[in-house]
Amino acid sequence: MVFSSHLFIFYFLPLALLLYYAMPKLHLRHLVLTLLSYLFYGWANPLFVVLMMTSTVIDYFCGLIISRQWGGAWSEPVLELEEGGDRSKMQRVALIISICSNLTLLGFFKYFNFGISSYNALVQFLGLEAWNFDLALRVTLPLGISFYTFQSMSYSIDVYRGHAKAIRQPVDFFCYVSMFPQLVAGPIIRFSEVADQLRNRTHTIEKFARGAAFVALGLTKKVLIANPCGKVADVVFDAGVVSCLDSWYGVIAYSFQIYFDFSAYSDMAIGLGLMMGFVFPKNFDSPYHSKSITEFWRRWHISLSTWLRDYLYIPLGGNRKGPVRTYINLMLVMLLGGLWHGASWNFVIWGGIHGVMLSMERKHGKSGLSARVPALVRLLFTYTIVLFTWVFFRAVDLPAALAFCKSMIGVQQVEAGSSLIQGVIYQPYYLGSLLLAAVITWAGIQTWDFTRRLTSGKVVLIFGLFILSLIILTTQSYNPFIYFIF
Figure 1 (cartoon, rainbow, N blue to C red):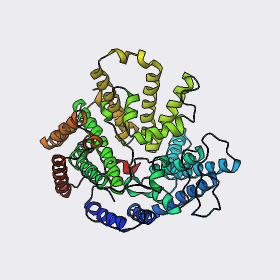
Figure 2 (figure 1 turned 60 degrees about the vertical axis):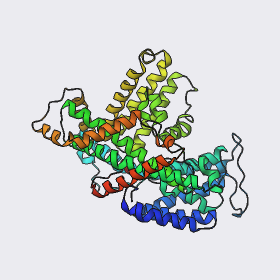
Figure 3 (figure 1 turned 180 degrees about the horizontal axis):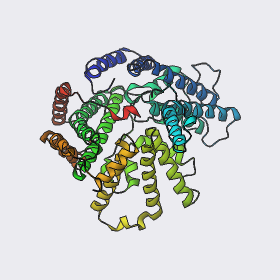
Figure 4 (figure 1 turned 30 degrees about the vertical axis):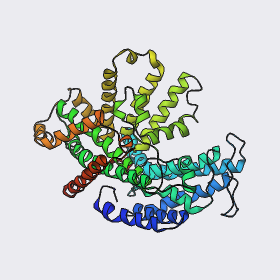
């Protein structure tokens, strides 16, 4: 079930809000929200719910052990561990179990197929075809497993570090892990960010109204911008070899698709959270305004970049152990970040390019060449690097990505008949969609800021865009959510 569907908007969401607000107490609302989230998540495959529940149960009990609350009554208060204090062997073991169980689930379901195919490719390259693994088994990737495993792990780590108290009530923790607004595509909500809200939060008309505005604007971005840009990108990338101009047009369309698609989902997730009293953190901050790759990662998918920083980069040593170790840590984090997005060498290369750029910018700092050129040039250079990396993110495999990059620099021989796609991608509707995307990207107001104060004029505009989006949604057959597959 996706947010941009009539099933969700007209049936699931009204039912969820009705049942949620019908409950008189917070823990009952959490129970309703949990059950609804299981229904939402299991809509595609009910077995996915079993997998998520397994991860949730393990982390719940690990949290109790880490906080020394094992065996107590549910009504007893939970003590917060001293930050930086000594931990017992049992506490350390519980943390290791939590981390390893989540990484094992993520590793098996996300990378089993990739590992087998990579192994077979290697033995074939070495001429050892007899060593191939010809398995009929192929593992289905559960929706959102990359998001909820990271989110669930943050609970155990935050409790262990003393950044948050463990949860005694099971339903509260199950609610935290499974909340449908951000379950399958983020933002990655760290436990420390919502721990107090799970115990006590306010439900106000102002919150609900702002949340509704987030949802409406998110649907608008998805339907009016992301979908038509995505159609252009699909035509170009699926065409094989295209001209230099068409390749740039296609990858720019994809850059808008992935930004407006993912930021739309984040907007709708944040809005749904507000409608239920939760305040989730901002996940995008105009990333294409960035004048360096370092700045890009402070603005793009903020919940992931800060998660990788706090739970991987800093524990590896961060920048505290000399420049060489810093560069190694940056590369490791970005390579693993690439693999987190997908089990493909394309994603490894995507992460590697970002890691190299981050390391170069860290090495040269403010004394580098980029500091001596105009801001507009730095912005265009950064956006160009991001475009080339998006090729590896979007292409079906490595040969296709390399061929597309050759097209972008004009050294790829264009196949006869490739110009036929121009009659599709340069239609006024698609050209207008890309122009609208560009204007909003570089001259528009972010949803986060636009909804801070809702005037009557803004309400009318948002409602009009919402109705228009619903009408167009009825006519669109192309309606993917990119980050559902990660």
